[in-house]
Image 1: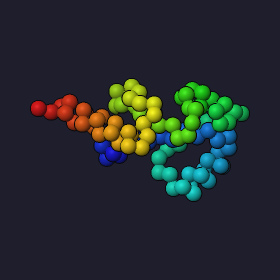
Image 2: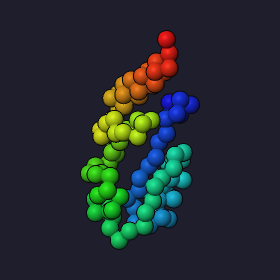
Image 3: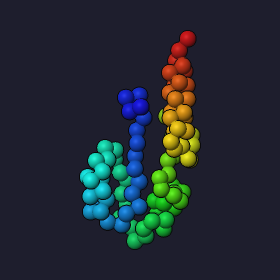
Image 4: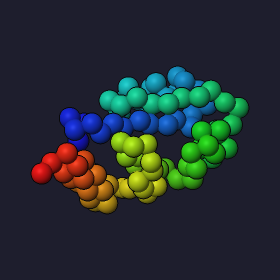
Length: 95
């Protein structure tokens, strides 16, 4: 879906940038990762609190309008939601 405007952004709950960089390199993760150095880690990390992250992976699907479409779009459901979103956007300017 990248060619149709879909982007993935990761959020790291790591305390140390080196650990995150090693993880990204080892796993060959191609998308950007948001990292905020903090005293807290895991569920006490400020990014976890701010974004309401209580489990990994957490998938928050945001539409082109900036509104949250789903807070738990994983597996097959993610594909279904993406199909719906792209179908709606392609028909919006159509016939």
